[in-house]
Length: 124
Image (cartoon, rainbow, N blue to C red; front, side, top):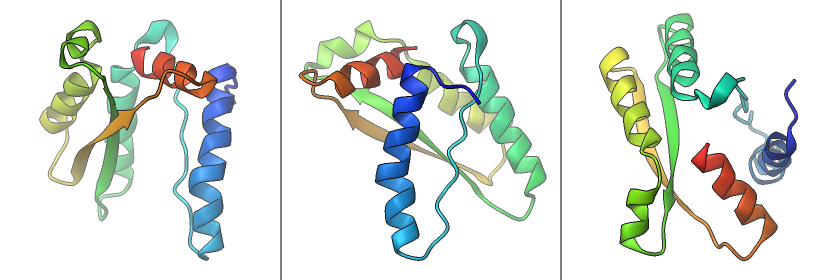
């Protein structure tokens, strides 16, 4: 299990905002998978993982949610890398009709400690 500062924060947030409410409804919560990624190469491990899940579950659709940082100024968008667009394109190209990709806007307010961690997670 990987547990850096950002990963531990993410697991805590996942438990509080996803697992607990879903369990209170008597449902099975989605599983959080944290993939190791040496040298900040994140796209390859994610694509590989999604394609493995797709091949292991031939009778199911696979949903991939891709967070995209929403900047306060439109021109800040150009300062950040475009990993979300690359990831989405690769999943469309290498996957099948069973992989559904959804972009999720991620609004961050830079006043809080959590926001600093969220920004670092998205920029890696």
